[in-house]
Image 1 (cartoon, rainbow, N blue to C red):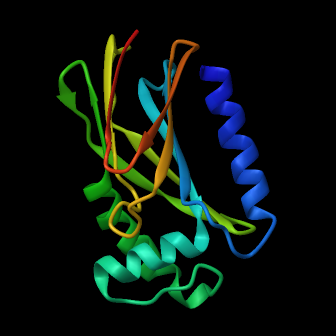
Image 2: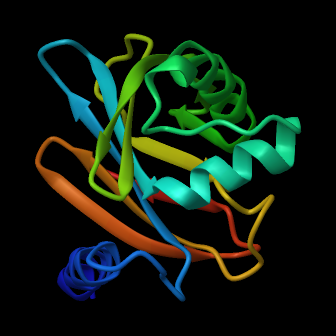
Length: 166
C-alpha cells in the first residue's frame, strides 16, 4: 500500500504538471525527522495555480508566484496560511513550525518548514488541510519518516488527521 501511494503521488504529480490545466487537486507533504538536528524537516508540494487561488480565496489578495514583486507578500501569506492548515504533534506535544521559504518548480511550488527540536518521537500526529479552503475534492498525500521508517497515507477532503506510531 505504501509503495502504491508513493507511486500514485509521483505519477499523478508528473502527469498533471505536464499540462497547464489539471482536473485533479492533489498535493503532498513530507514530515522527515532528522536525528542529527533533532527536528522534523517538512516539505510540501502543491500546484502553483491552486496555491495562488487558495491564498486569494483566504486573504482576498491576488499574488503570482512567477512574479518577483510578489515574493515578500507570498512569504508573509504562506506563513499565515500554513499556520492554519498544517500542524504537527510528536509524543503529545504540538510542535512549533518555522517557515523557511518556497521555490517554484515548473507548475508547482515547493514549501519548506522545520520543527522545533524534539527527541526521536514514538508517536506522530499530522493535521493537513492545505487547499481544503478552495477544493472539496483535494487530496493530500502525507509521508511521515522517522528513523528510516516511512508511513504514507492519502488524506481526502474532509479528512485531515493522520496518526502514526514508530
